[in-house]
Amino acid sequence: MQNNQLLSSTRILATIGQPRITPYRIYFRCKNDDETLGAYFWGQAIASAFQPCLGMYEVVLRNAIHRSASLFASQGQSESFTWYDSSEKWVLPMRGRTLEKVEELIHNRSGKPLLRYASQASPDAVVAALSFGFWPGFLQGLSQRERPRIFTDTFTYHPKSKPRHWSDTAHITALVAQLKAIQSMRNAVAHLEPIWKPHRLNGTEKHWSQSVASLRGSMDTISTIMEWCCPASAEATKQSCSGRIFRSICSTDAVQAFMDNPFNAGKMALFQPASRGQTFV
Image (cartoon, rainbow, N blue to C red):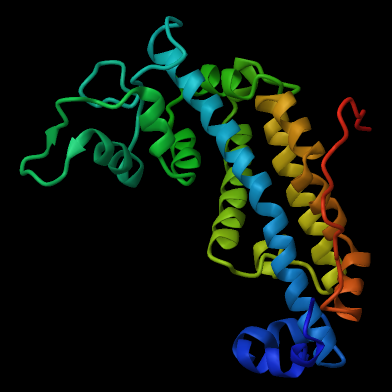
């Protein structure tokens, strides 16, 4: 049971602190402390709703790139190949921090000069250990020789996914920009930063309702890119609990509900065991 005597918006806001609360109070045009705390709680909820969907997107994109890069480097012989190994003639181009991230995984960094680990991890294990930020940089760094084939095989279900389409640098630039925008969103969620702020969205939002619309647009972009890689995974994410929660929370009605009653908005009933043979709709 909740202790209503402890549920003081003013007291909670004082604990959170003005530097963190003031942007909510201003942007959401809050009239009192209850509305301000509700806006803050909604900001937490929308970030939490994004996280599982971003996690699925990351895995789908990573594995699609790994498969296409492997096929390219192995000349079609393997879907899991050491395309990243700089000691091999088939290595794909990587530079700067992108290259360093791979080298750190296959070399013992304690020695000078760096020595390769005697027992190398499998390609799948190496790829799984790479951070989300690796992939946009890797795709951007591909040369004109690799881009058409790797992009075509990565984004198989893109409506125009043919080598000729991906030979156009403008198409590469536009897609990589989308990937980097999603990466920025993912980093903001991971660091518990407000994702509704205009500089994280289109930069033109003047009202919180416009941020809600832009956040829905961001999720649409995430879903679309997943569809280009694996339609089944995109649809599963939409129909998952996380997908349903996102659609519920990312709405102007949800924001109003949180601001009207910060302590009871979004209250869910406890789950009950499903009956055997029950059909889900």
